[in-house]
Image: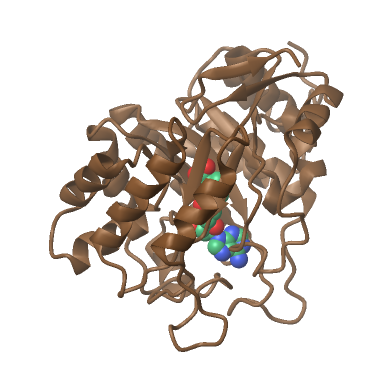
Amino acid sequence: MRTYYKNSSLEDIAHKVETGQRLSGEDGLRLLKSSHLLELGRMADLVRQRKHGDRVYFILNRHINHTNVCVNRCKFCAFGRDEDNPGSYTLTLDEIERKAYDYRGRGITEIHIVGGLNEKLGLDYYCEMLKRVRLALPGVIIQSFTAVEIDYLARINNTSVEKVLSELKEAGLDSLPGGGAEVFSPRVRELICPKKMSGQRWLEVHQAAHSLGMRTNATLLYGHVETMEERIDHLVKLRNLQDITGGFLAFIPLAFHPRNTQLDHPGKSGTTGYDDLKMLAVSRLMLDNFDHIKAFWIMIGPKIAQVSLSFGVNDLDGTVEEEKIVHDAGAETDQRLPGEEIIRMIKAAGRVPAERDTLYNIIREGF
Ligand code: V47
């Protein structure tokens, strides 16, 4: 395979990629610090092509954010509110059930419910929510509640994470999404989310979910105060856990949106297209034991998400419909993308769209 930059400092890494060797943290750092975007893309695309050929997955899903009341009040988050703040809300079980019934018969296969840490909501609210959603949407996979919510429920109910997960599973929970990981570095957490549980704890919750047979996702929130070293360390920690459990389905890098957050200040803007493509490509290259790298178009925009299909990405998430967390932080993307539009984007990139379910079973292909 031809290297575009014969004399680029990345030749030894390209050789490792071409011969299927695992990259070290140091390799990852050099990639992330490099500005040879096309070379990075070429390497990531090679790995993607080996794993998935021309297939690009998408899913018909819906997001519900059941409450924005949150005791953590992370500095990067524009969504969380104190309970007595104007604009705070908590959906009743009836309201959530109504939303679920509204989605019935519209072809969705996954429901993604996440929210703040609201001390008024006990485990019974979550179990009842799952039971009602399960009844309203039979056959739809419920991928809900971040590891942070699971850990909080365990703490306020004075029980273990395993017990909480088992009860939620019994009530209908299938899988955990990847939110709440932020950056595992204690230095970064102290600066951007001092009240949030540790990165180590996030990993432990996912390990517990994997041991109960639940598949989960992983994320990284990038583009704020973290260093490149801290991003790579995060990826290596995920790769190490995946070596042990094999329970992660997909990795989704999340581009930080500063507006309306405590990290917003004059001159602070969001990530650039270059940052986003590099982060996706390096994720594909470092996470050799993750099957899927997903672009969340809500955060990086549909156009960069489409281009990312040549930078290691094999999954475009999703139809979504209603998104509050990043839109409160100034995202200018729409709230929904029709399935036909996702199919058009994938085909225009010369790939074959495949509608999937949460576990990457193919529902429909060859549109
Ligand atoms: O946990 C919060 C992040 C996450 C901001 O698993 C922000 O398939 C950018 O995890 N700017 C929630 N990001 C979203 C999430 C997710 C999304 C899509 C798919 C999946 C999946 C998971 O959003 C939070 C936090 O890390 N976030 N505030 C912000 N201002």
